Length: 374
View 1 (spheres, helix red, strand yellow):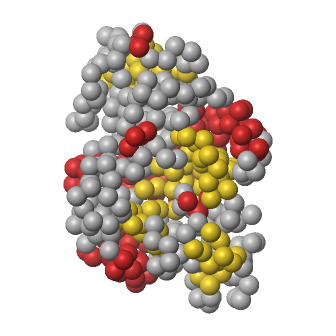
View 2 (view 1 turned 135 degrees about the vertical axis):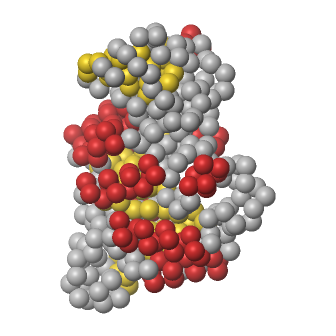
View 3 (view 1 turned 90 degrees about the vertical axis):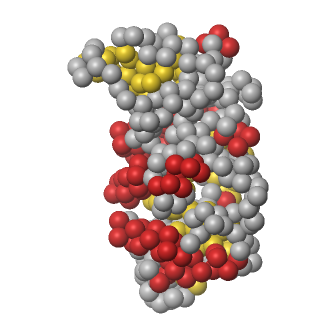
């Protein structure tokens, strides 16, 4: 393929691109006149084709999008040969949250994060807790425009020290996330990305310097689970996990344990073993309790025994920080020093009951604990 680069966009002269086995569009084509008219933002990371189509290079789907149509996420549209990010500035969720809700257990314990989301996702998880916004289109939930500067102002007014891009999938509102993160950094605030990790190498590398921490939903260690339950693929997520760790940006991982689908002892052991080998023992892993939702209402909540067994397996495999989530009072929420085994942070749900390491150093043995504490 020949061509030349203009910014991050390439005008394709010859050749065709595969769609990686995924449909070009999801649902019916949407007319450009039916969608948002103001505050449009041209998308990053796409290629133009001579036939008028564009190729989105943001996530591994590589959607080939014809004129007037949208990609799989339904929020990136081809308008006259330009790929437009329809949800730029269109936040459907703006709220202060405990940072533990994300969850981050090794980032600013007890602080609040200003949470931000637009509609849209590049997955279609059958168990999605936020499907009413993740699977919506911009037209279904009209919202006022809020600039990155306004987002930073709202965060400061609510006494939040970080922005958290969360609830839906921030990969698909990449440009808005990146601009908000830049504005936050200029104002002395930090930024957190809560993601499925389904993003290509170039956009992720460009984003990482603007982030303090990333939480990835590591949904399963099974390719078939990603394909059948999430409409995605496992390998790109593994690549993203390794990329975040190698960048030096703080990483935490959540695995939602769903009865009969990804909760077998064998799979949990393989998942923990991969984390230990590829990412190291200090990456916090949160095993979270499933509750029936969306298209998986026929399954029961995760048994407590399954969560406790998963945590035991993680510790047996050599991981230093394995937590249990969505089950307040069950245990497995506290942080212990991996050297002397003393409890240094006690939690219940999203509440910090005691923090003995405000500076990130164990008071008993003076071992520094990995994280972003100050």
